[in-house]
Length: 283
Image 1 (spheres, rainbow, N blue to C red):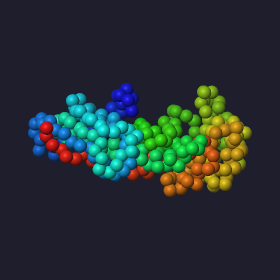
Image 2: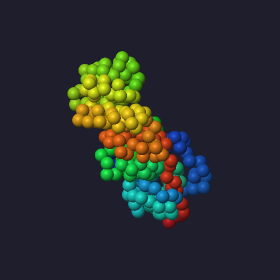
Image 3: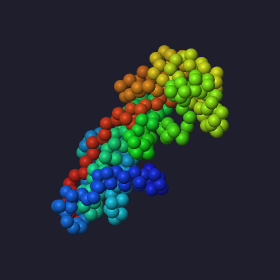
Image 4: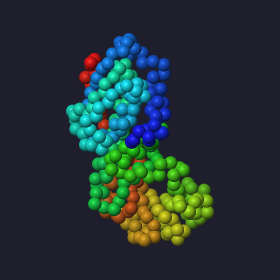
């Protein structure tokens, strides 16, 4: 995540998180540290995983005090090990203490998503299938969580509702059927937009193909039906598999041959990566 992206999209969100944690003052820090004192603290990894979100972690401290210095011994996407020293933060001890939890919340969450994503993405190495995230993200965390998916080796589905057309079951119900929904989307949307539609069985799939859908999402279908669906779509539409895809059950989907597999679990069910700030001392 570069500086331009950070300043344009992330700073306001990070400041909001800091304001959530510090409404008027950090009363604990102010009680034990009355005046400026330069200090240093270590960023320590407490379990094996993939690190992601280092720039966001750093930005938390910079927004509190531009003079804070953060030195990393790793980069986003690196495999990290339990006990590894990932970096050092130097600056006003009051800033180090007040920014600690917010900075770690971002880094632990993003690293956890990258770690979980990589564990699934590895299963599809050597295949044409790409692992996608979804919009099942934590409110106000989407930019961070989707970035972490990419660091972990996954790919981003549409960013938000303005970013792409995806006709799901309730859209189909509102339109009156698969063919009607696709027809209405084609009439409304710019021609440069692809139209994706969710289907739950082979009859809906055939309707979607006849109506000219660009991408067909196979939702909660059996492995047998999905295999047949991929054959029917060959040369006509791209395919995406979705529906309760997790690390525990994804192996069954590896050889089906879909173009994409989307998993909400990448962002809504990944555990954090345990990280800590330790050894704070004055310098």
